Image (cartoon, rainbow, N blue to C red; front, side, top):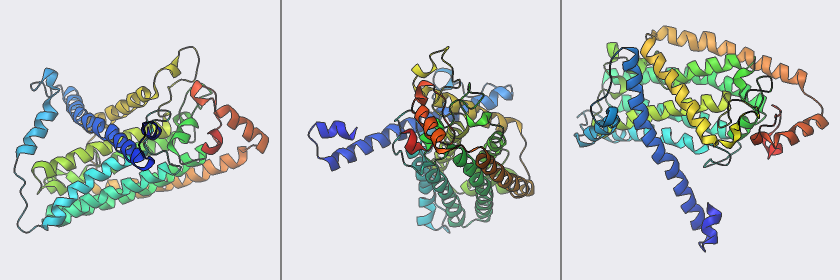
Length: 379
């Protein structure tokens, strides 16, 4: 896009700036619309599982319910508690919402459809997602109320606990892909299920990693059964208790943007991202745009998130901590050793390596790709 504006006679600096702004808007605006729609879908799924109707009044089939709720909170008065730290109280939801959007900069929606195709994309996502806890902790402390403060402490402990195991899970994925570039990780998943299926999840060593990553995603986004930061039975509404109007809505939007991000990471890291599910030529899978496959996989994982929330009872806090530190952490460490050991045992010589990397250049057309090819060699 930068080259397009340069060809129109614009200076390179301004062309790059305009292209970047347009790229940000092309991601942020559809994401906000998608958040409104998945809130509606979330409520519809819960209602169907509970044999209720769900939203069905505002707009056809209730599709405009989320927009009506957004208008309602926009028109409400923002109330700041008299004893709160006003500056931090107002900036906390802004941090949560902004951080939730920043991670999408490196998410590839298709071949070449990414805002920032950086070689450390996965590390960038991990770093940005780690910043999300700051908005929650600041909101709990700035409210000067004991229930939000307890919730903020819970959130900090919960997110740190599961980020440790998520880090080791991502190490296994990086080892197999040979890169932390998200496009490279997607290309490394071609033909993993006996050469027929695209996705690390069909690898016997990485399937347990996906199960742990899916459960850790629920804990990282504070979704049920790990929504102890918003446990109304003992914490009212948790860190959001003192918030109203648009400040509450920013927490709301940020939470669902993070849920969508985790659904996208599940699809990208273990289910082939924008690749079609099958690596065969019987059906013209690769003629369908990659963004279609990625969105389909994101919706599939979001259905799982909603299904779990509607059916699984909330954990106790000691059970939450035990699962993270005594189960997931040791298991992820064991699999780091197993995966690295397996790759050392099966690593082939340089000639075979280069041969497989040459084949990897045809991955988009369905050719098999070596899991050990670096993204630099594929490109």
